[in-house]
Image (cartoon, rainbow, N blue to C red):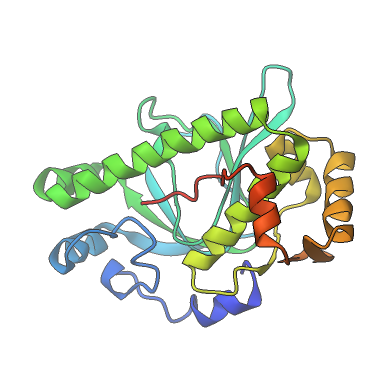
Length: 252
C-alpha cells in the first residue's frame, strides 16, 4: 500500500469486482457515468490481481489488450531516452489509469513497474470499445482521459525544459499533495514509494541534486523528511517555487 492510511479507504480483501461496488469509483473511469452505465462497465472489468513490488505490469513492446486501473499501491512508468538513460514518465497512484498511450500503436511504449504490492483492474479494449459505442457518457470519459494524458506530457516537457531544479522538485511534491488529497487522506504527509534516483530520473535531475534539494527544503522549513516519509510544512512557498504549476494529476 502507498501508506498506512490508504488501508482505511482501500481494503483489497473487501473490494468487489464490479465498478459500482468499488470504493474508488469516483476517482477512476466511471466518474461522470450514471449508475446503469457503471453497472455495464463493471461487468467488463476483469478480476483484480496484485502485482508484486518490482514486477512488471507490462513491458515496452508488449501487445496492448486493455486499460489498467490502480486500486491500491503505486506504479512507475519509464522508457529509454535516445542517449540510453532511463526517463521516468510518471508515478501512478490509486484511482489512476494506465495504458492510454498504447492505443494507437497497440504496443506499450513504456515499462510499468510496481513500486510496492499493487492491485489493478484490467478493462479489456475490445469490450470497452463495444460499450463506448452504446454509452455516450463513456465516450466522453475516454476523450477526457486522452486530453489529460496530452496535458501531462506537455507539462512534463515544459518542466524539464524551463523550470529550475527547485521548481521541479516543488512541483513534484505539490502534485503528490493534490493527488493524495483526492484519495481523502492526509495529503500534507505521505510516504514516497519511489527512490530518490527514480525522482531524479523523473525530474531530469542528478541523484545528488535531489538529495541536496530535500535537505535544503527541510533546512528552510518547507518540508520535514523522515526516511521516505515527507510532510509539507509550507504549501504557499512550495507553490511559489513551482511557479504556480502543478504536475497533472490525471484528472478524469
